[in-house]
Length: 224
Image (tube, rainbow, N blue to C red; front, side):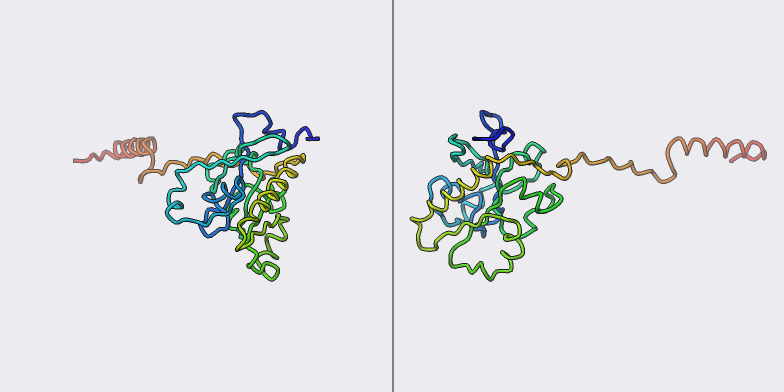
């Protein structure tokens, strides 16, 4: 049974709120904004096309999957710039590239809190030696991400990888998990004090002039 307060329950029956999947903002990534849709919805991996990548910023990408017997639409983004608290609370999955730089300025105190709040995935090809890779040992392995493996020359097996992705995400969304944001995203910047003009403010200048005038009058000296 789906728990009340689970991530799935947050979106159930909500037309105005969609779960979010974050992908790397790099054409070199195995999965990114321009090729995630055919992989997870059609079970077919597609290589990157430089011409298509150039126009990605203007394209909105959504993918559909079945979670707990319900068809759901997911927003796919490769940038979290301008995210509100509601946006962060809607992120349910992130495809990682293995670098901590990917999470620069994300509002989480630690990687433990980040991957408690969303499910991490790392996808690679079978001819990449992951077992000996420091990248996997030092980052992805410690983060507890699910590793998805594509066969380099077996596109007919891509559907199986897509199936693992959806089943893993469904298991995560069935759980009752808290969202451990460290700070309010995008805090309102404080206004800097207005720079003071040389010579001080008008009030200070006026007071100074009056003081000089009184001093001149008392000494009997006037400007010619």
